[in-house]
Length: 364
Image (cartoon, rainbow, N blue to C red; front, side, top):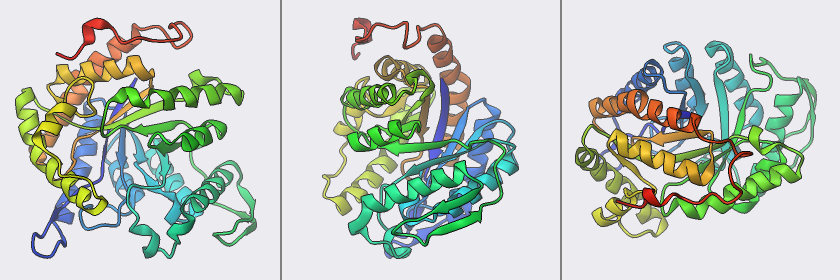
């Protein structure tokens, strides 16, 4: 299993004005985080795209290119590229160039995004949200497949036999589709033969099992071998040597961030009781000691059989030294334990059709 991290490069906010503070320091720290993740043997690092004061990165490819110059083997991906409000040709060019800089380590994780600020910023109509995404995903895949592009659409000027450069080292450069469990998105990814990144940031992970089953069943019906169609689980969490310390570090910024976003969307404030419940084996948060986090990854692997796991350590501004220690623990303790166990397990073809969660993994 590939194990890695993703970050939205969260920033502090001025409590009086709500404006951004510390973006320069946060971006510099982010590069250091990617560098350490590479050093400790993690497989992937993703950087999100946002256009808000609480996040520092609006152009993931720029940050990832800087990280590429300071890393050797880790794969570098957006998490996500907000394709609906961007130009797919430019997205492809940016990541093709990143692929050249990194010598074949770039990926694109395409998605609708979790916020809508980029739509009015770039003149897009939210009323055509789904249609815009479908059309732009089609164009991105066309540009990836064809050096000389012929394409017509409704939401972007047509392309009549134009060439798109540079071309990446990888042919094709990987494109993942970020989904939140929506059946339509899952089916679309399977039909297009795209791997999926499934975000599980709240609630029991078991409720996402039908989405993964639907994805693999649709792959099979479309003539694609499910074994060759990767699934990533992307979740929030934090790791420390002591599980109580992990919770004490993570809870304040997590609660502030999720409660603030909740006020925008009509969610109730996040409580410590909810936070601790989500830390349990059957909750969504990976907050605890290396042993607890490894156990939880393996518990979910029994449910999903996924090939990649990405952890967002920084849901809200976090002490940089603590984040670096969490990355070290993920790379040197969690990842090796998980990889050993997964390597000893049967493949999807060898496993029973209905995998039941073992009784000894009941919540402690």
